[in-house]
Image (cartoon, rainbow, N blue to C red):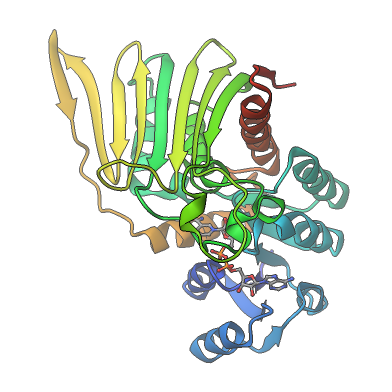
Length: 340
Ligand SMILES: NC(=O)c1ccc[n+]([C@@H]2O[C@H](COP(=O)([O-])OP(=O)(O)OC[C@H]3O[C@@H](n4cnc5c(N)ncnc54)[C@H](O)[C@@H]3O)[C@@H](O)[C@H]2O)c1
């Protein structure tokens, strides 16, 4: 494609970061934004001089975009994405892909049916430390990774307490589907996306009483035990509220030749040199959180222009949904869930 891509943004909460990412990309032209909230629409329009604003995402689709970002509450990801794909529009959909495996499957089917791109926005893959570690792993520096542990634990940090985030029918779940999705995805991606075979999980809701107004029927802490194809094991934990010293996120990988840890934005590789144990700290120019969304957007724009497959596909998102749904099912049934 030798012209700029026409893009639209649907949902202007986190979607404001998408807007900034598109605005910094000279290969796109922002043609419109959609949100039910007039204040958010007007703020975005005046800051970025956007030609069109709409309340309904269906109206944005009639403006003829090539690509839209879907940054709506989770339960609207599937309907908005399928509508966009059926209108012949490529989609960058925020995580989690959907609220269920069935909805995620509909999104993958719609992308195939319409021969359009569907990328799931997993911006942690685009952080500088993630990119460096992936390069080292792909060059064999860790050998066979057979054990991994990951998590994102907040001491107190229930998002939008009482609103859609804490309403299972609208969010699909609590911190597992909100934060855990980032860390499980990042870990599996670093490992080469091994398929999940079985999952077990436990979830807890111990802080519901702290939410005074609105609805709260999701977990505030989740733990998952995931067996992966090839024999590796991944343990994951996520909380919005639990009694830990402070918020932290981490990935720990243990391989036959070396290991690695990303803690916050610090990357350390554990290996051997000349029969000595050494720790290596790569030097990098850190990306800010906003930069990694701009990088993710630039990646998709280039893929569309050059006809390449993006590095975070709808199919991978569907596999992730099977893990998340499996953990919730396992927690409810007290059993091991086989992932087909
Ligand atoms: N990648 C990340 O790190 C990250 C961070 C935060 C949120 N997210 C994801 O982004 C998505 C949005 O989260 P958020 O924090 O921005 O939520 P939010 O509630 O702040 O924003 C959602 C926006 O969607 C609008 N909206 C709701 N229904 C609509 C409709 N039918 N048509 C048009 N607009 C509608 C709302 O008015 C609101 O402005 C979620 O899926 C969340 O998981 C991702």
